[in-house]
Image (tube, rainbow, N blue to C red):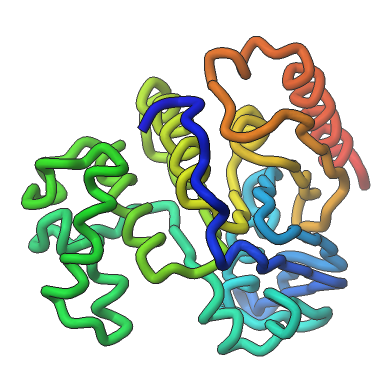
Length: 273
């Protein structure tokens, strides 16, 4: 896939937004002490929009994704995916979560790992592999279908994990630090790859990352979270069409200004008592 390639017609399922209103999630920590991960968290992600979520470590970013996906339930507030998607099962059915680690099974080849998401839904292995195969060529993995995970580079493994996330055809993608484990050069390449991939397979996207530049490059809007308990303290619109060319974006003065504003918001939230 080439940078700047024209996107296909929008995916039929992109008409699904995400709304969090007054959301709180609390845990029991060591010795029974209460721990609040997020509190009074409000966030609206429009249908087909890509929103990046940045914040300091431990501020509840991963918890936010699991709440949206229906893997956890809030202790307060409401979460809706789509017009009628507040029910846990509806959220589970609408969202696909890509965790930080690729979690590829070492005994399966790349195609088998990608097909696993469909097999988990009851699709026969042969049919699941057949449906996964065209994405390997589209996403630059042609001829690597039979490779084991140990034979793939870090970027290739992340592409396989992304294909596995796409295959169930869920309208909402939740991406949790997808490139955190990669070296700087590979990470930059994968950011451009993901920008182009989302142009050909558009979805509603929530991207959690520690990298402000990554969020600004890939997303339509960036939400800044405070230290734990996480709440949205700033939101920045990115007034550039997607997909973007990374080489041009990193020297764009508007993105430089937005980066400075995002970092200032992070700094101010950490100083706040």
